[in-house]
Length: 212
Image (cartoon, rainbow, N blue to C red; front, side, top):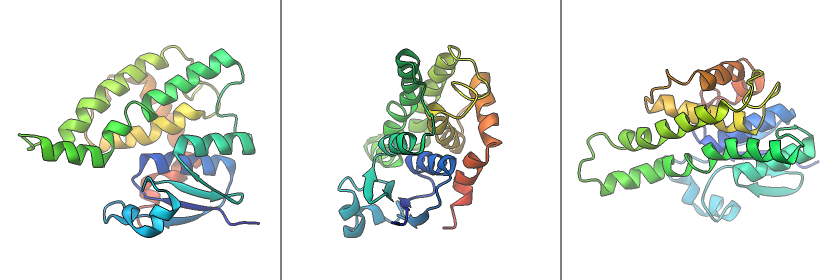
């Protein structure tokens, strides 16, 4: 059987999501660090894995997969993780919840984007932190409002972790890194507390991978 290999970086939100999914699936994997700080992602070795020069890349089942949401969907379908409801309407609502983070907040709050914005700013004294807070706070405030349409039991959309939880927890890690005020978001914080007690989430936390 082919060995499962995850090419990731400890602080990458996208990699963090995939680590949680791998842990939920009970898949043992070898982690290969692609150091985004030193620019490893732009080297020939990683470019050959992913021409986008992004992490994560997952080698599994004889495949080489990119894009965290696509990887998570593959794991969901092949390992029966039940990350999304079967009912089409409920499924669409749960996907929208997750995508409000992974599609709307994450791309513009990528550190490379924020650093580029810093170079274009006439007043960069509080950049990239100001950029991050400007986009993360309203995005999470909207997520909090969206969560009110679901019953936390105790996760975003039900009694077991779902796709939205996998997207939320890494975004909250970033929010705290950039000192975003979360005190007025009780639904979101309740979900975070439930996830922090789950071993799959705890084992995927960046602090567990910083020294890899």
